[in-house]
Length: 262
Image 1 (spheres, rainbow, N blue to C red):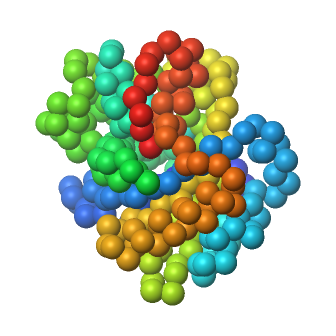
Image 2: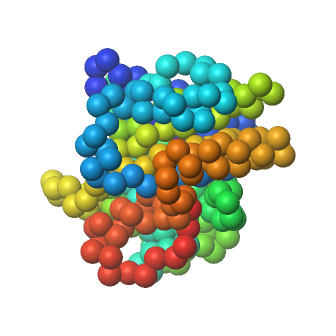
């Protein structure tokens, strides 16, 4: 799923995930992601002078060959769910990434399904490209791949509606190990808002993410090794809550019980 363009001097990621199979003439895709995440405290974020150099000295810089310098992307995701918050509570997320600037004519409906949680999160990612004018109807359109999958698997009940917005600045790096396995890693700085127009920020969040988009045993062994190294470098265990869960808790004041998730 493409990232939203950042301001002048920054860049847009041309793709999200790896190895998707495209359908509907290239407007929809299916992929997998295996991801580890670590939460950062606000004071840690405030102490970062140069986000582009954040990963220097970590196992990501010593065990991988850098494919390009870190790039900065900006995105805004409108999360949707049913009245019981069934998707977010189960660790899934269904959202629309709304583009701005030069890509304002394109946005993406994306469903991330948490298939298994162990040392990392194994997930399925389904995306479909939309025009902005389609968004209001798209969130309940079973003809779209992400929504149709949610309905077919009975993961949500009743109408879906916006529940939270996450505006994210992502500093993303790409690396490759000696066997040719690609690894994506990022520093994410996020602001949460309620979905109503003109609502001020209600919370902030930051995290580090490391993921591979291959289910090959070699790729998963590499992820485990890198994650163990990041555990030590960051000095903390891996996070369990999703961004969508943090967003919902910020918007609704933590009044709902959320399930364990990646």
